[in-house]
Image (cartoon, rainbow, N blue to C red; front, top):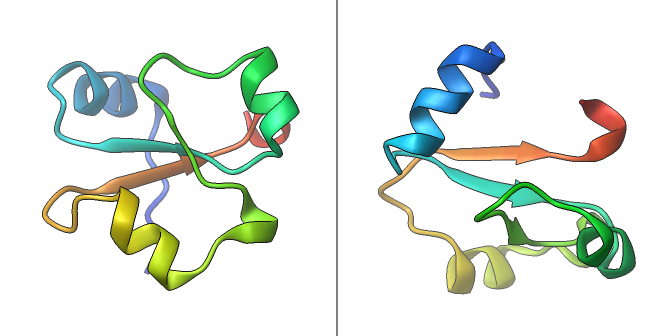
Length: 69
């Protein structure tokens, strides 16, 4: 179940390396600008196998896109 958090909580999670940031926009937009340390998993190509290869299942995942910020 998704959880919405405020920017202060997000900042703490990222600074403490407790959460994984995932950018879901296409590669060209990710290359243009993304948050430092963000992983790239384009939404149109996202599948369970890709997520398992890239993400650490023991840490929370924060999914974002610039359209949603």
